[in-house]
Image 1 (cartoon, rainbow, N blue to C red):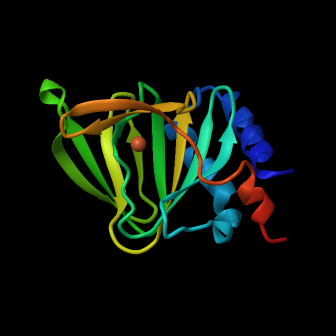
Image 2: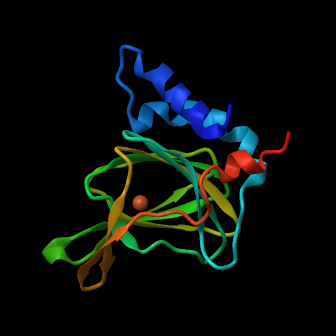
Length: 176
Ligand SMILES: [Fe+2]
């Protein structure tokens, strides 16, 4: 079974438990399923690499490979709920408030290896690796199809959320 199908199956198994699944509750089971694929992650000097894992009607699972200096824009998630796990390395998360609709830094947190955190539906943040290579797992419900992009003067764009590698890259690359 390929990786997207296995993740979809796992999410289906978790959905029948009494506690309804959330990006938070499925994060560790999905991460465990991803572990055999981590040796196949691709880095690029050009940009952080967003690997598609699963894009389903109600869930999105994405893995990101980061090199030093590769920073997201300040962005919001358009009301989508998410969760994140740092597989390796260390990310810095800068969280912003938006007084007068302009981003103002309120917190800077280190997210170390193994750490999990939530991406609340109203979160405004940016991420970048603290030093060296990092790999992170991101789960969204519903899928994150667009993000609000923020500049110092305010939100300037609603941008489609995309990938840097084709679908099923990780499945294809997995070593037997
Ligand atoms: Fe984000």
